[in-house]
Length: 469
Image (cartoon, rainbow, N blue to C red; front, side, top):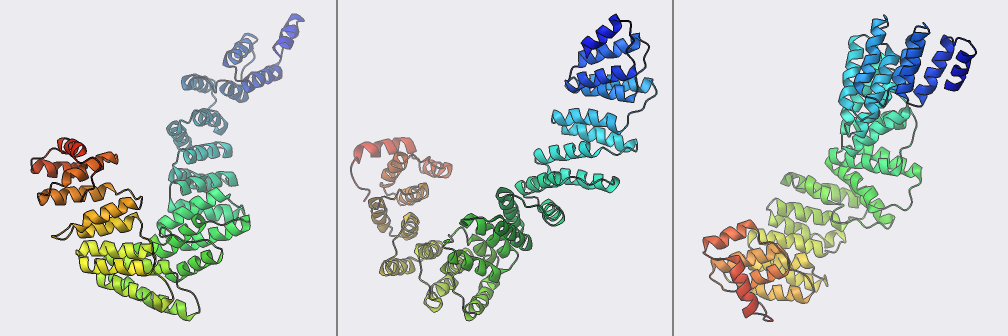
């Protein structure tokens, strides 16, 4: 184009306004601000005035320049009696969104509103998408709603989809509900599996059970196969938070029928719901009995949740009652069942019951895990005579379980308080396991005039290869 203009001038042919504007459009498309200004200077030299479109081409060419450069163009427009319109602000805001300057974009949109101007559809969508991309879903949705309230044009489905994913990622419940309705029910679009999972997590956080069930419907439409535990766990949580325990039981039953084994984490929402008060623990038995009368199987994990909730409510008697009811519901206790009960025994310092539970665990052929041994050791340490704690500690290590830092810290404190020198051996083993001594234990040792480093080093040299008891 530049070559043709030079040839025209050489032939004495004066380029007209249309040719100059076409030339401006070309250099603007390539983002060449210096060339654009040169064309403008040439137009001025030829006595050809610029119109609004010419200035817009110039703004477009300066999109990679500083904001001051763009405002110089706007100031020149004003001097020529042309006030900025929607298209003018589209170029200005477009630069702000391209550089991810959301605050500037919002400032310019506010200026437009004061001037009585409504942003172009593409301008509004770019600002909304930027807000969603920057994890500000509430702001993005507010801009979207404000734009649609002032403009007859509707935002594209892609914009609402981005608002949906951003709201789900930030667990923004109101945004998820609004955008899901617009995307799925109004636009008849289907989010992908990742977006659906994010929406499910928001449903789980806020107890949006109806929406969670709708998401599962969309999952089925996507043809998800195979199903996994993480597809169902948020639904269980949403149903529990909404108080729909029977529907949650039905979800667990559906998981079992699809050969998906729920875990203790899957049913944690049951525990969180029940531990609010003892009335909920008592009421759940009525729901369980009705569930069984309908010919359904009671999941043992539900009984475990009742036990755990009772223990958390410091009601060991209720927990034991739930444990005794396992045969009534054709269920068998597992290692989590005994671990929850043993944790209750630790809290109650009930060594006799703990020993009985340990015996029943072995009779039921349930293999203890590291948590089981930890509870037994801690239970022994609640008693005036705590020697068995060391026996179970050695048995735990024989079973290839690594004692936790909590176990060693408790042994150290109990032994120090009892003037038992075996605390130094526990301290040495704790260092060998790579644990950091808690500050509370350091202060405890200091109160007794003991140094953790010296005692651990002495124990390491004096008791190498010797058992702790």
